[in-house]
Image 1: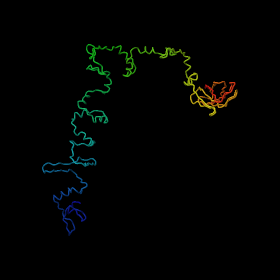
Image 2 (image 1 turned 60 degrees about the horizontal axis):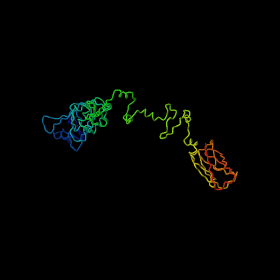
Image 3 (image 1 turned 30 degrees about the horizontal axis):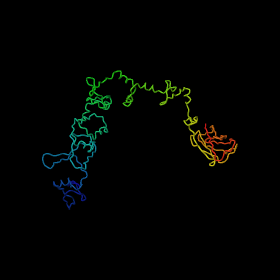
Image 4 (image 1 turned 45 degrees about the vertical axis):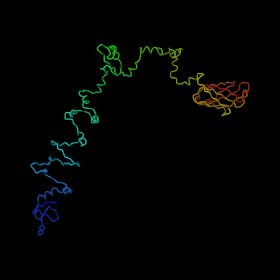
Length: 391
């Protein structure tokens, strides 16, 4: 639709115009006649239609308002230097205005701005934060803080890190004299502890100097190690020292025994240097320790026996399955033992007059041959004890 400027603007019958008089003889539109009401309707349209998609204005919009008077509101625009788009939000309300023009866009979201809703602080109070170098994460520590203004004012005047200052405090004084744990009691003018008549003995400079040569930092736990000590620690240690000054010989008695330990020379002690043997291996030399009893019957598995693990000394009770004549040899019996090496020496003897010959020594086992030398018959079901020592 357009407004025709008749007669210089000829309009054909295919165009839409706002209002006109049509001359059927010339088949032309006559002059367009407007009324005030017609023009208002043309410019405004209706609430339920969108006749005008884009309206381009060269100047400003002037609003009279509900009252026709000498005052109007002009909606203008600062001369743009590039295409701009300003959108009206999909909410109801009143648009605020800025006191001065600015080319800076507001980056805060409405949610962020709403944080100030209900705030009572003034500009001076806000300026307290001016120059604070805390990060957003650190400032967020205030979220949910319930401290009062008076409590926050306690840090007013602090000139350095509070924790650093607290860490430098080495003693706390109890002005009430109540001897609270962890506090130093106040001494009155008479040199006595405030809550008692006990005189306070000042620490001397010499006593304090003892601490000056200590390397590192003593902890309360380390200082508590001397709690309860009643005499010189070194004297007590010397009185209980089991070794002589050269640490080469035992010189005191065993605890709880009146038997003195024999003095060992450094040469004797050195015998154990680089030794790899175990207690069980040392017990090979002890006739009363480490004996392992095993038994076998010739009627079962030909008298073969397995002694298990970790046994260097065996006491083997063998039961015969038949008479063994004088000078007769018994069939070989195999003894299985994981302490036997191919290079081991195996000693054997018997509780009866018989020769025990050890042979076929290999890793994990050896064999014995029994020869009756008793001068008589070794009867069926009779027993003999054969002792073995594996070296």
